[in-house]
Image: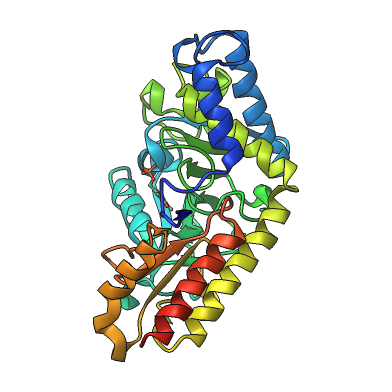
Length: 355
Ligand SMILES: *Cc1c(COP(=O)(O)O)cnc(C)c1O
C-alpha cells in the first residue's frame, strides 16, 4: 500500500534525495567507495560541501557579507550558540511555543532575557503582534514556524535590533529577505536532509562583539574560517542536503515551493473547516502551511482514536498530534506531493460519511 508521510520531523524528503543518497552509500562520486568510508577532505566530498553551501546562497538569494555553515548538535545547539556568540547584556525573545521556550531557557544562562510577548496563555495557538523590543537589546529572536502548535510567521519582521530566527521547520518554503536577519538557523531534518546537521546563515559583522571566551567548536567564526570543515562534518546529511537543494532548484526554487506548499495547506485547511467532525486549533491568520494541526470537533471527541486507526490503515503515516496539542498534525513539508494531501482529505471525507 502507498504510504503518505506526514511525520513532523524527521520527515518526508524528495525521492530524488533518498535515491541519490542511497546510491552514494554504495558508490560515491564513482570512487568505487561508499560515502560512509571516504575522507571528508577528499576532493569529491569538498565539492559536495562547497556546492551545498553555494546552493543555499543561490536559493535564498543571500547578499554579500553572510556565510553559510553546516554545524552539529541540531537546532537545539543553536539555542546556546546564539547567545554565546551574540548576547552581550540583554536579548529579546518572542515566545511562540516549545522551541522558543527552550531557546529562552538557554539564553538566560548568558545574560538578561526579555520575553517581549508570549502566546502561552492560549496554548500557543497564535502569534503575538503587540510588543515592543527594548532599544538596547543585542538581538531579537523569533521562531518562524512553530512545528508543534502549527502557527507560522510568514514574513520577515522589520526591527531595529539584530534579528535571529529559528527557521528549522519552514526554511526554503518561501523567499526570505535575508538582509533583515543577522543569523538564521535550521535543523536539517524538516525541509532539507536527515538529522545530524544544522544549517546556519550568519552575517559576519554580527560576530566578534562579545567579551566572553567561547569554546572553539561553539564559535561561529571557527566554522566560517574553515569553510565549514573545521572538524569532520556529517557527510551523509550534507550529501543528502545537496540533493534536496538541487531538487529545489530543479523545481523552480523557493518561490515555486511556496506556491506548492500554500496550495497543499489550503486543500487540507479547507477540508478541516468544512468537515463537521474536525476543527483547526490555531488562529486562522497564523496558520502554518508546514504543520497543519486539527482535532475532533467537541461533539465527536470520542471518535479521535477511531479516526487515527482509520487513517493509519489507509496509509497515512505520522498524523498523531503532538501531546501538547492532541488530535492530529499533518506536516506538509516541501517534498509533500499534492496526491498525499488529497489522500488524507479523502480519508476525512470518507470517515465523515461513516458518522
Ligand atoms: C525540530 C525543531 C527544533 C529542534 O531541532 P533538533 O535538531 O532536534 O535540535 C528546533 N526548532 C524548531 C522550530 C524545530 O522544528
